[in-house]
Image: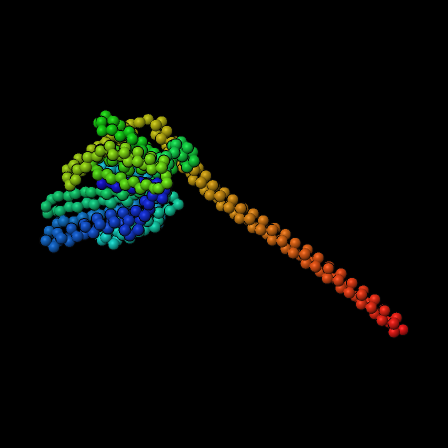
Length: 367
């Protein structure tokens, strides 16, 4: 199953997802606790053949760049198609035996997330559970994907203008998600291009009618009518998307994996049979995309440095103007003090002259 949380700036997605009572922590805790209690009940009843294995992945998706949130030293990661579906290779997979241990992983993932890049990126929590009973001879595999998408304020603006202002990859996944939802059709002849972005590729089962149950939670904000209208239209488009969930049937899961494995094998065989020119072209495209991403990051870094320098220059200018004003005020006070001093000296000289005249008069009278 998949739960997609989408919204606008200030819509409350962060409050809904984060914290000890957020969706991420609640999903992991409830699932781990329920599996642990189920195993304990089986053992209490004497059914020792039951076992389970729970795994957790958490990563931040910015454009096509993947940041592993379960380690302080993330490695290079990329999306690959495997028989179980689209997976993020290079991302750490955490396993534990208790709900408390899984909660530590979730807290660490939320702590490692880049807060400055959060509005422009999507966060994935992928939980995979395998259950089996060796005595009764059955096995089940389940997958829960919790996604917090990038903010969708951009849907109320022109895609080209946003790409020029923010960069080509910044909101490409959000726009492609809307395009897939708007053009979705139940016709078996319709083609779904989910590979247009990493976000939609990871959500491929939603748009290809896979065995998945999908829910979308929209967080709207007040005072943003154009953005709210765009999200309401997206919600209406999502309402017509249909999936085909089949639960608790390992035969269907095995058949789906076999079909994916066969398709991947055919695709790889076709790629190997392609010309060297195609491979060189793909390599060149990848190299150009890497250069473009590097140039965009350098541009953003240069812009941040320029903004910091401009802010320091404005601060210095304000301090310089204040210093000049203080110096001018001090000079005015010094001039006023000097004038008062001159007046006092003049009064003293006049007093001395009067005293001399009086002394001379007294001397004449005495003579």
